[in-house]
Image (cartoon, rainbow, N blue to C red; front, side):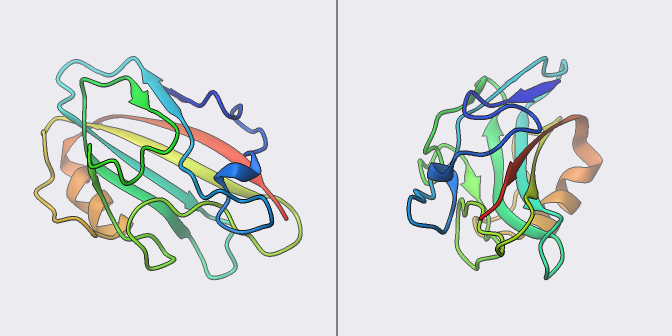
Length: 151
C-alpha cells in the first residue's frame, strides 16, 4: 500500500497553504492519494502527527471510517462529512496544519491504515490514541508519508 500527495514529496517541504499558523497559512488539508489497498479493506484511518513537537507527539488530523472505495482525499477534504474526524491536539475537530516553533523543520507523519471493518463504531471527536487503539485488531496494511515544515 502506498500513500502520496500531489502537494509535496515524501520527505519534502509541505507548502504553507496547509499550515495552521503564519502569514500565508491556509490551514487546508492537503490532497492525498493511495493505491494498493489489500483485499478485504473495508475502511481507512488517517492520522497526521508531529513526533518532534516540544509537548510530545502532537496529533494534527484524526480521520476514520473513510470508505475504502475511494482512492484519496482532495485538498480541503477535512470537514466534508465524507468520513468521521477526531479532535486534534489543538483541541479542535478536523485538520489542524503544521505550526512548529521557530527553528529546524518538524516531521509531519501521515499514517494510513487499511482496516477489515467498515466502521470503528466511535463517535466524532475521538482522540488519535482512541482511534489507533480501536483500529489495531483490524489493521490489514499501513502506509506512511512524511512532510517537513518549519517557520
